[in-house]
Amino acid sequence: QGQLVESGGGSVQPGESLRLSCAASGFTFGYFGVAWFRQAPGKEREPVSCISGFDESTYYMDSVKGRFTVSRDSAKNTVYLQMNSLEPDDTALYSCHTVSVCGYSDGAFFYTELGPSDAYWGQGTQVTVSS
Image (cartoon, rainbow, N blue to C red; front, top):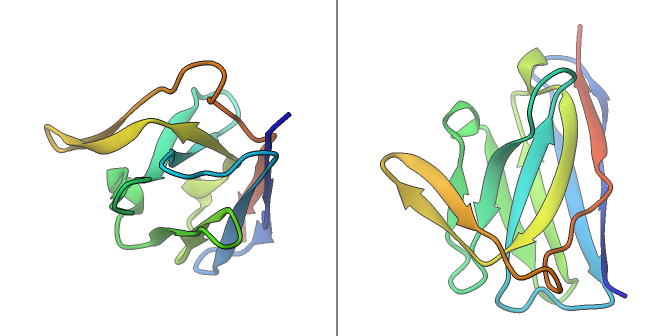
């Protein structure tokens, strides 16, 4: 049984950095894309970033462009989200999810889902940004 496990969250002050990890066990990412999502209290879950499984192209929501960087280490079967210049609005539960394809369309990034047997979600890691 495969699973995703996120780590690296914490409580920081505005302007500080965190690096989140999404480690896969029981399966390999291979050509799967991996997307990061976040959900703040009282808000819907939103896609933050995605890295393609084919060419490692990266995609971001507008509010994190230039501050967040997604990357993957195939040898470690892990995807990372480096978050710099954190802001209070970045406070949320961050989760990773395997996807089929990610890209940009009409200025916004999109992703397509995998079939249910390959669509994994992690349990999430909390990021709190507060002074």
